[in-house]
Image: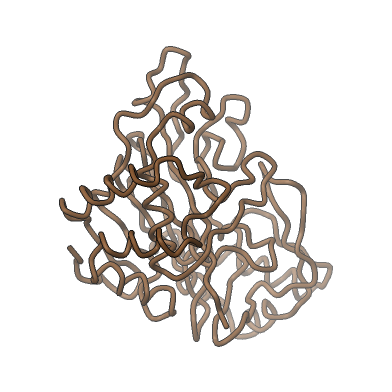
Length: 325
């Protein structure tokens, strides 16, 4: 069923019992498909099959987002996922042994948006779908494989064409750990017109962070026009935006201060429990600078070799790219 749009930023959708049943059956049909290296959303038969088992309301909501006229955030409730999860030791083994329900959902949402999946430009998960799962030796890393809170950011904006939308789907949650989001507009509203204009100048370098191969997008605006009215905000709360220009450095300093101010009153959060999904506009908007920044609140608890898989936090992620032209 489709819940009402709460406001221009957020909407909610809850999967019906029939949708859950039919998606699980569809996942069995595509159980041997390699969702990680061969994106199902590029196959006409899969796209048609997924559209046939989901509601017209979900299709319209996703279409509105991909066309720039919908909410910036969609909270998905009661999403079908694989249960129980396998507990074979390593993450790779568990991924290989689990069913493909969550992979079907992430690929199907992308298909309904008439979009495509991006490969993750990281050193450890170069596939079309990724696992957000803590790894002990990277516990302090500011990334999906760390345990620490994550600063606010837009995903992979050190790329010329970063993801338009980011989808997260929780297979197993952990109490007290939240995915937070902060509307870009609430940050930019705190800047002067002069600061805003300075952030549109192509004088910045935006670099990658922990867990990624070292790379940077040079001579780029922070507030960047893409095409056909679409814009992207290449914003990080942490120190990953640099310039030698004095006025540019002043504008970045003002941007960081605006984030601090906006965090005091504009942050919203979603506790990612099993079967909760989140689709967010990754700093993109049409006809305005908008979308959201996202982060993680709370410390993921350490685990021991005896910790069962059902007590470990595990999310899956899809980086979604729409066509702007």
